[in-house]
Image 1 (cartoon, rainbow, N blue to C red):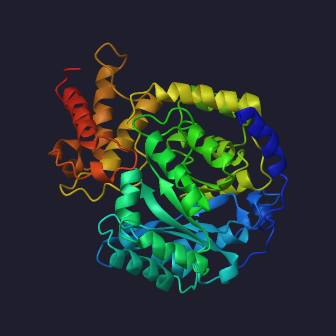
Image 2: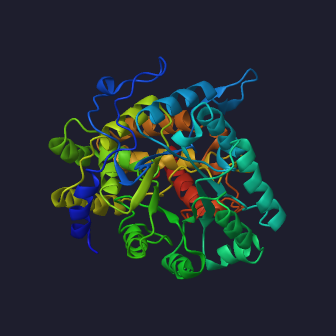
Image 3: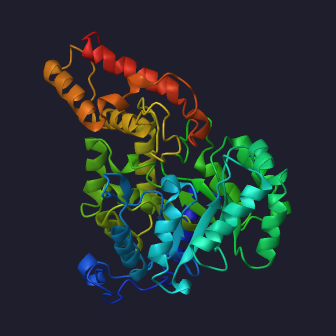
Length: 443
């Protein structure tokens, strides 16, 4: 099935009744009404009972505790969850390892203030450090305990990297047999996996569908990764087509590519604004994934109220992309793929660095400067001296000096954790060399 075929189907999908009409009354002072948000339609569904806008709980808002430590801002989380549920969002995705193990707890506190039938729990078997049967069962049961529930709606084998990785962590330990029995008993309603892999690794997992009958699969999909995934990652068009051909619902992670598709170049932004002046740049990425009918839900890590409200405007009274708009996003993706970007999505899996480096912060600063055209090219650049001073000042402001790239000793610990398969030490050296050449005025 090609993209044009998808468009025909997605128009019908967009007309489905929503999880909840986005017109509910205020439950408290933190929840906005539909009229206040400018929403006049239902939450988009492709599958009955599941809103296409899902909540990714890996980036909850943070605050400082009495000791000055960064902790999850529970009051803010509660407010965001209230707003989301009131307007039709009901799929919440977390993991025992998100936010250094605290995401499940904070998400549970917020969700358990609402009736169990009003939300769908998606969490994961994140047995990276210890894949033993005993630890895996303990992790699974701990999730049930934290959420005070007798079932998990969507349970994922977390971040499969290859067939060998799947065999080592799940098959050879016997934990798959346990999970299949839990599914039979109804304690796991849907069993699937998330994957960051090359094509061969993904295809090997598809071959296991006849044995395990995957209920859903979570993939990285956006208009850049559609045909420009890069590195050792499989293109999203291949994964989506394979899943659609098997009638397996698709959960989308990184629809914004770690925020990269929310901040484009000035010319790219102007192109989108000329067509939809009242829509955000980010909304185009969400309309892209929402236009595919086999998408069960698209996860967004909505850290702030304005992120949530912007996404609600996109998915309530949804407007699928037409072919001309698909072509425009493909053109932008082609341009983006030619930038010398690191490609970090800010997932934090590489953290904490044993040497204190703010790896995502370094990569975020560098990629943003490339996309926005604020990076320093050389003495021939107009206003070079001023640009040079500003770039170094902004780098020091964005990433404190003790956490910058020059502290990397290439221990390699971070590489094994990166789902994007980025050669992190090499990229840190490349950025450090670039920064040092600016400092020494040797570009």
